[in-house]
Image 1 (cartoon, one colour):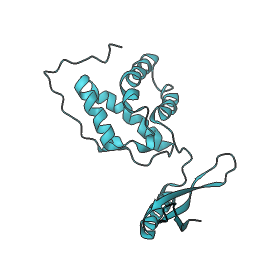
Image 2 (cartoon, helix red, strand yellow):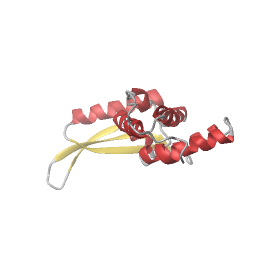
Image 3 (cartoon, one colour):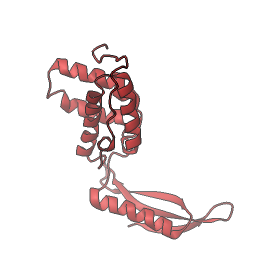
Image 4 (cartoon, one colour):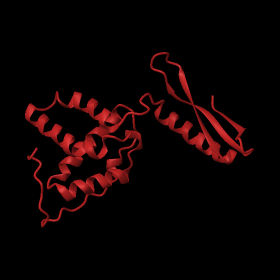
Length: 176
């Protein structure tokens, strides 16, 4: 059950907060509740609450609240390594180690946006001749996050691929 209440801060100002179900505890199977405060109006609070409840209705409760990109990469790697030869696996692990994880690994996967992905791809395009391959593998981790129901939209789907300039000195991906 979601609720909206008014509260006062030390200065005497009145603000609004809402309490809503946000996830299910994996051990007790009970619904966890989250409080969001600091709304200036009841309408603003209601709008936020409606959006959260709609998200839960559409996608269910989230059980992986704060997973980072590199954590989801580990899930991806566990399933991916059973589908390719060892030499391919070594090459892909090198791409992640040297290019993808340094760009995206530290961020919570739910908070990675299309502009963040665009910036990463732009940087890869400046340094690498095969930046499209790096983008492809980075995208696979987002697909894994969707499969695991951690995120519901892939921010890599929204980027614009840069065109590679031929006169730039390219670093080869094989030089690890």
